Length: 197
Image 1 (cartoon, helix red, strand yellow):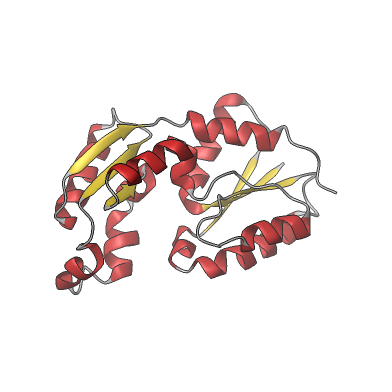
Image 2 (image 1 turned 90 degrees about the horizontal axis):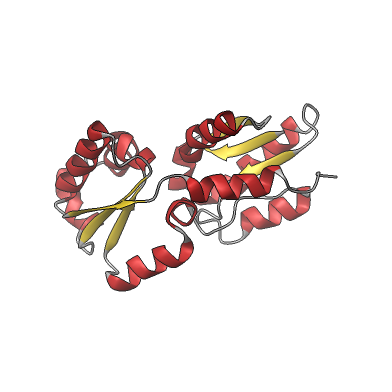
């Protein structure tokens, strides 16, 4: 089985599959597609079609990810399933917990382990903050805190990177331990799902 995965979920998905022993090959798409979500559905369609001849089943390792239903249309068109939720935050913390976090403090900026590790590249460089740091207030002035949805909160190096990311944004950091069980459960549903036509 092949999983066409968001680049931000590919590594943890592959690690979960290996630990459980699922015969799952993960094929990542670039995580920077999230900066232009309109490109996600066409990229997924292209890779699913390319992989179909080599696998008995193909599934999609994305939540909606800002496609506003376009990814669901592609999945329906191709007869494949995708991960549930609006975004990967739902997969780690659960949708109810994410809603509660944002209701409690609407100015919450969420980070996953992937975003913590890649913050300099995926946030600072992509937004131009490495070249124009004065833009920080333009982009993040409405935020009041950073919440790290920590899949591996015991990783001290990752914790230091999360602190550094929050400091660079000028915001306090809250650490919320999530682990990867939500993603693992969602992947289990995909892996055990019906065969594609």
